[in-house]
Length: 454
Image (cartoon, rainbow, N blue to C red; front, top):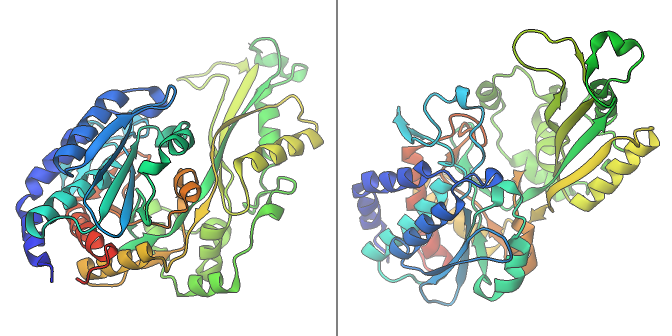
């Protein structure tokens, strides 16, 4: 029987060292969307994988892609793939951060900094768990393979190519995905899939150049043209109205709905975290959970046109653009979305609006009773003293289909985040206690997934 009391004591004795190591990684910017610090961060991660995880690891590239780190440690009957990414979202808007995004700061038991939750915290915690396991329990009882990519936050453009080229180094019996968190009520969560994404930009030009706003009587306004087009994509009940779009959505099964009914969801705490008094459509209960987990989204991420600086400028904009993302559920794909959107706009006379497809990822969903999922539940139960909440999928997106669907690897996700971690937003954070607990939980997960009893 493994001595996890000794393991826990070791982790707690090394907490300050582990947190400092995480801070060093967060301090290094790695914004893939802007090409900032990617090679430098990959070098740090490669060094940590070899030192902390004891992995035989390499940084490899396909075509013009960023360094992707793969490695392996341990022996045993089962193989686990650990997927994480070392790139982060842009830190903007900078003036909304309480402390600089790349100066990791401890405050009231939390650690703040860009990437601390998404995804550098989980990446480091899992390597530190491997180190603690070896120091207290012994050799790893399974093969652990890692896949750390550097462009998850900008669409994982080269990942499918990488998997095709290096798939033999990635094959496994199960995969732990990057993300995981405690819900609004402080309960640990486990997820077994995620939504896909289709990111598009709409561009429209009216006049040859900006004009005096008095000419709004006779000169087309690109901003209004864009707004009118956007208004056809959704109605005031937040229902997506793109022709044929919802027809492609696979309805949840009776078993799915029964599982949703049992799924705890703290509505009061969630509203409080986001500073809202009601959810979209005034939904609550089963209908709220059904929309959140099983419906796609159509989100205007940003609109640019005309003058938006200080003071006034009476201008008629010649150009306008919008960035939109669609979170996808089965059986929607990025290609289907682009085709339907183009046809929808054309039918309404918006043939002048250019649709530029950006990155896209298909949804991915795996059984909640796979070996990996059951091991995650047992590990979380042993760590937190309570059963985790098991989600059928995460509401967010990622390149799971490019890796796990391609290689047929069942997936589970759990981690060190919290419902207020502010991923992709200012003041991103994790609780240091949650970070320590994820190290503890991952050590147990390795043990249980290998087929051993706690």
